[in-house]
Length: 175
Image (cartoon, rainbow, N blue to C red; front, side, top):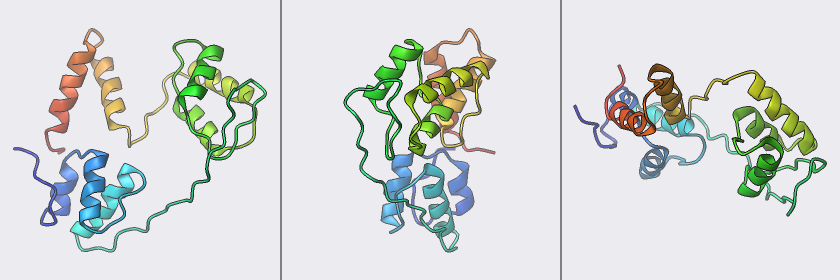
């Protein structure tokens, strides 16, 4: 069985059986004159509601303020509203936490909150989150969840094998 094309004649049940990339969902939402913005799950919910002739849920779009980030960072720099996890900020964290640094969920939430706390608190949060071990991966990061699960089940598997398994998985319908 192959994945069906995204068309308005697709049933909600069939739509939900398949994996869709966010850009595919956004393009299809535009065709249906639905909002293509927001999280992948939000777009999918709007499309599913439309396909089953229900009223789509409202778009919860918060206006974003322009991010004014400093040119240089220090441990005393305070996190501002509208900050993003940029390459410059990554470089700062790598200098503080080592080359294995990754923006994890707790740190991304801390940065996105724009809470005015110093970056020293962000570094402490990151280090503490590593001590807690792997955190759950949010639903919208399906590829990341697959990769973690594959590596747990196949400790000697290669990255190429994990990617190949991903393409097989996403090409099949869910139960």
